[in-house]
Image (cartoon, rainbow, N blue to C red; front, side, top):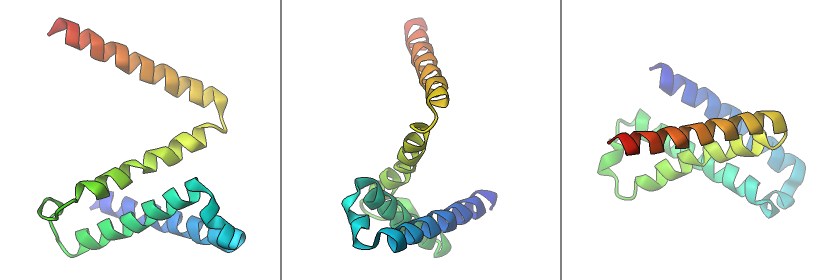
Length: 110
């Protein structure tokens, strides 16, 4: 499917990025928490890719929620990226506050 193809392409990009960072930093690569998180994300991405290719249902695997948590860590990469653009960070913060207000509004209506 299109989603699986996009996931494979992004995984390839992240893999190249991690390999290049490891090549540049050598063993200092492991001293940065972000590098370790990125490495874990790539590893779990490959695990997820192989599970999908083999047709394994993730619900049948014990502790498959751990894979989902690591997939959510991909969002941490985006948050780290936002630090480089303060104006975009402000827009995202405003959107998050608006979503929170909408949630409270829906809760009040119910």
